Image (cartoon, rainbow, N blue to C red):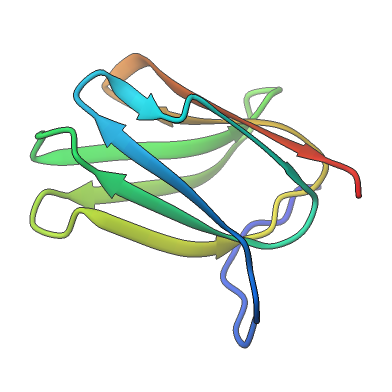
Length: 104
């Protein structure tokens, strides 16, 4: 079962930065080893609101993320188990960032 959530007191975490542009996610794919990391999403789409979600490759939705224009940065420490995931925008089905978590 994948774990996702905030962890307190984590130190020296790697950051995975994703920028949402008017044409979608940049980068379109992230590959990283299993373990917690800081997910940093910057909204540069120009939209008033983004409704993002992370789902496992089998379609299980794990996390909903709302980003508003007045606060265009989102940061959260997450810890996904081994496997393939997608970060998607609800109103733009073509906007997908693949996330692959490999075993150490």
